[in-house]
Length: 285
Image 1 (cartoon, rainbow, N blue to C red):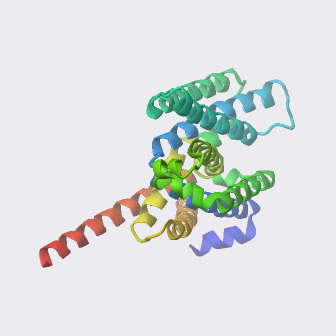
Image 2: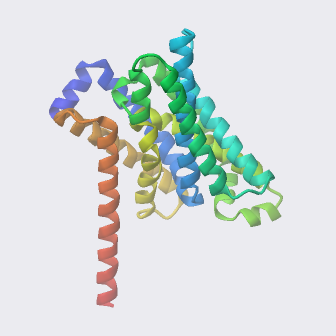
Image 3: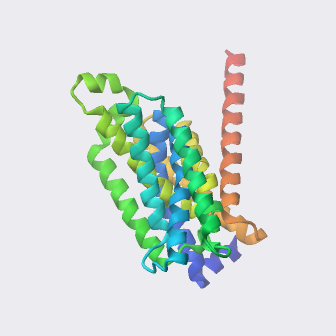
């Protein structure tokens, strides 16, 4: 562990990785709590995998057409927001099942991404890092984008917190009270899309859904209010990222996969301990 913190002091890429983890923790703790509470994990998964399409198109434009001002992260933002809007609009206006629409977006986004990666000459290391996660490749310009996304997410949730709570816990009552439930649900999906983009830099498209949901699920076992859940979830995400980076540095392992493995083990440990305690309480009673 000491070697890891020494490396953070000495190397800029390690510092960037740690800062990216902090930014991911803020967004993930807030929006992940809404995702778990509203039970839209599958929707978040569809959005996260559609991001591959945006990454593939952006990588193609950069490599083949020399769009030097383009970054894969920009393509991820556009693809994630587009997927969120399509899922929300089709679900609300055309009355299609949410899981059906999400499954279609999931498959099409992945297919578009694979197609454009195949059309891009050579092996694009940066695109692969977004697919499987490499938090140590986050650049200074990427951090600026992540800060802007975080500020947008935190500011929007701060302004509409009570409306989001109403949409998550009792949408029918909120609709009776005159709240535009559909509009705020669409806004929540867009915030989820932006959070997915933030997390993609840490753990990649394939594993982003785990970091979005597992910390919030763990936090939900120890909190009583949504605000408490958000704060604790953010702390847990940051803990997972720091420990995951330290372990991956010590044993030369992929950082994203290590972070997710630690999150999964913590989730299983918490659920198992909770179940054992409840069993003992029942037996004692």
